[in-house]
Length: 81
Image (cartoon, rainbow, N blue to C red; front, side):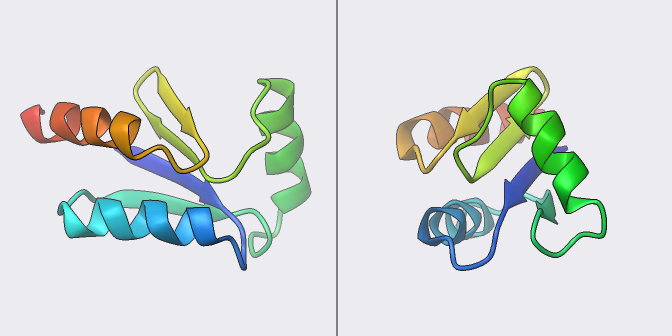
């Protein structure tokens, strides 16, 4: 399952989610500004060296920011199963 960490008013987050939706890729979204434990989630992500939103995870792969070429590679892997 693809996981997306996002925040409000984030154009890169919106573009990433739109790209995944357009390609028919399901994802679980955690908006760090809207979940009850948002500060804990942010602390955990930062402890892993991840600070630029959005953060997209699939298996061991992690993409930060809006990166269409890496997202396309991930989308192919997701569709292959």
